[in-house]
Image (cartoon, rainbow, N blue to C red; front, side):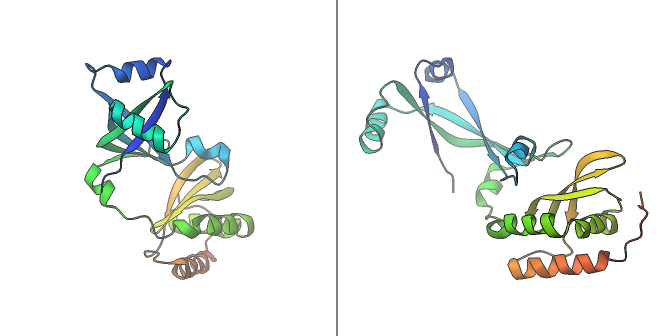
Length: 203
């Protein structure tokens, strides 16, 4: 199912005047960020860029909007982000991809999102050594620091610092996580399997 967005811009802005021109075909980008654990990390964390066509709302629709929602926006112009043209994924440095709009719109929300922040906060606060051990055991990289910055049903993104510098790496789960109970079981199993990881890195 497609979703339309309404944009309200002050008429004085050059962007609003450009979008209002009938002879210009316009597209806009809406960025959806993964909720970062810290606000200062947001701009560097995962986001999806939705490229959509933009059209100016007809005066009758604008009047209807003002009637129902707000009657004090007379100096603003209304635009609608309509048909989705492209979907791009930006996961940070060297992590980029693209999706078909239909695939994005048909996708279901990740099952882990309702509890992901709680799991990450708990692991980062109380079990950072276990995360370091899992990175060594499953990825083969010895790190000095490891912080989980995102979590989904297939694995975790871990922000690490090592003698080679800092980066984010993917730590896949051993199987798909379907609910919070399974998520805990997977992390416990991976922690136990990593307990005997050697002190030296494999790469």
